Image (cartoon, rainbow, N blue to C red; front, side, top):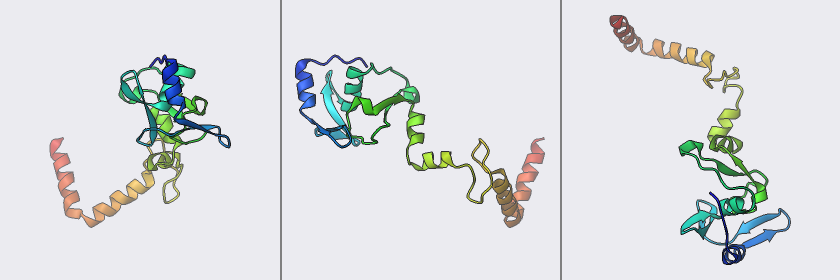
Length: 154
């Protein structure tokens, strides 16, 4: 996205921004959607931090689906901040993994809940084997049926 703001656009957008001297955040005080400030630009509602980043730093590249670049609030982690110098252009995956969601927390784990080291597959082979053995002991008839079906396919 390439942004060319008119003087009127700049005045309208800046009138809804309050600078926090403690954090240097440009806090948005206008319309909000999904926790992020929104402004009218080019006939559409756009996220304000994206418009200002594309205008003051670099045009935002386009991508398809999960390859679409995102802006990460790396300095302040404040979704209402529109300061383009608090943002970094990154992949969605990198942005998610920097956060505190269950996905990000699990990705940072190096050991399973029982203390075994996790391989790249993120599935503990020791625990998986133990769980399979326990299941086979509890369900011998189902296990025999599975084995019988597998042997019949050969």
